[in-house]
Length: 153
Picture 1 (cartoon, rainbow, N blue to C red):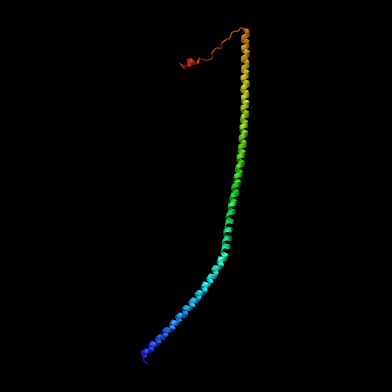
Picture 2 (cartoon, one colour):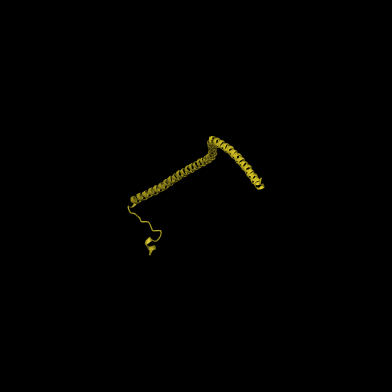
């Protein structure tokens, strides 16, 4: 045989072996990929079954924590509002008491002024009675100061 033909045959055999090796390597890679895809599908199915419950539980837990904090804040605000209401009621009571005290003071003042005017009225009545019994004439009082008309000019 020709040496050239022998080399070509050896090359073809080597290529065929190499091709088989590549095909075997490709088949092994495909088999590994199939196994991984099956494992991934199983994990996805497991997540699909358990994930909604876990997400629901996580959401409930998060809401519970947030609502506890909001509840504490709301209770604190309610306490502050109650304290403010009590203080406003106390101020209102003090204002009512002060107003009643001022009304009492005004009542006493009105009584004093009324009794004072009643005394003046009684004195004037007695003076008039004396004047009408004694001579029947009314005596004008002397002015204490200059008349108002004189001051204006």
